[in-house]
Image (cartoon, helix red, strand yellow):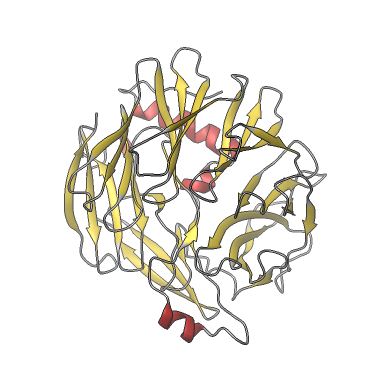
Length: 408
């Protein structure tokens, strides 16, 4: 069941949503690694040639979530355009955070929660009834919040689990019901209605990613519930086929497997990436976290580079010349984060120092990585009346204050 927030009680909201997010797998979207990726390895496509021809606007298509743990957090789609969710509604900036305009309002009866940002123009959000605590509608904009399209929610007995946004007009939405069953829908297609599709095997969908209205991937638990299996569809969920992933050298075959979809490039449409984590089934210790890549639209997957270094905890970046857009990660201000870069199959680790921002109730802060040099950090001020936005252009060596965004 969705949960509404009492605006003066951020801590209890954070705690409750964190527990539910972990249950549904939401936490991977915000607290887990927000991995920045690209892959260019074949006999005809060299790293050097691609790097010379690509600019930073070529990114992976993925989604940034705001409001999973309550209002707050700023995500920047690029150096000029960003979004933030406060206690009353959704705000957007188009001048690098200097000024902000409200583009969607909540109300006494319905609050906005959460928001899913694809880029500077496209975002979706759900509304929650403050009395019944049920989801009421899903909204979409593809013009930066000037106009919104409302989709009445499927049923009050279903709650949002996750979302994948392959383009401007459509979204794939997974839900859970009171019986613990998972459902998968396409919304915003030609009919503009909710269209439920069949899940690969069971009713326990764990994660999914769609590159288009037709082509996508999903994971479902194995029979023992300890690991996951990868499935793909090329007909919009009408049929699914299982896919095998390579096993890294030295990783026990008995390890459990979890997957995190990174997305597909908007430059090379057939290039896609995911992270595979191998863990000891008894202790839960991670034996390896490996990048898998495809050059053929996801028909086959191959290992890319060595395992991710153990010290890379919060952010991973693959190839400095091609980055995912607006990946936002929950961090602890005043400390440091390890930014892993995987280029030509070799990992390097960059230590990023974070600005020391006043933090009431240890609520943490939000870090947006645009490149390995350009980043933004936002955090509440001491009395929760504003979010303070900082920017770095030199990889965290120096930070400067952009503005204080009033928190309504």
